[in-house]
Image 1 (cartoon, chains in turn orange, blue):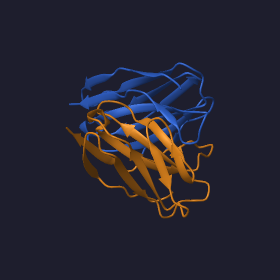
Image 2: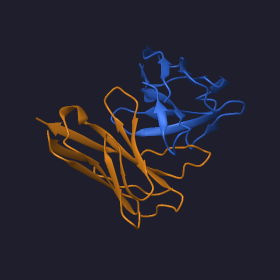
Image 3: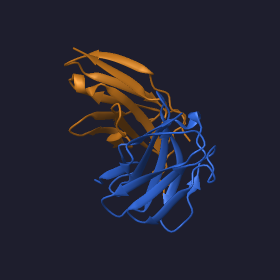
Image 4: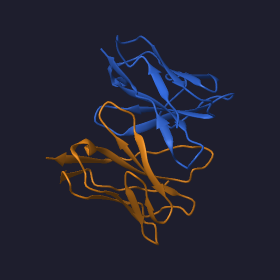
Length: 111
Length: 115
């Protein structure tokens, strides 16, 4: 399994763009990169997933360089409600379906 | 997407007792997963529960402590047996999405406190 490193915490202010970078140096060829968001007292929620280059949806963008050894989750113009823990996961989507969660990044958005 | 409910949402139990947590999904799914999240920590996978087969446990988790049932494609239970205060955690179930790799839908969790 890929070893994942992401910052433990980040602070931001409302209206700013937030970029959370995840390092996964030994990512395997078949691995996808997936990000989850977890609010207090709730289960994690899928945000975005990608394999290479850039993926964008209505919530976030995911940037993956050519070597795929890192990825950056970009949240445009955050609000107070974006305060949450963000998890970077790497997996191959194999028929085991297993997700291995790392420590996550606690994002605190301030007014 | 899938809508997942868990019962109970929270409970306070005495040491040495057992608690069974129910997970109900609004659609038929093959893969279901049980996680534990200790206070202030990340999620740890306990086991994978596929219908029609024995649950597969991760390292550090055993069937005698966390027996799992999966009687059909929409339901599963996790029992926390012979509880101790160290079992105080949030227990979450999840199901896999067919639409994309590594996407899972999580239930709201069951907050367990063992005294």
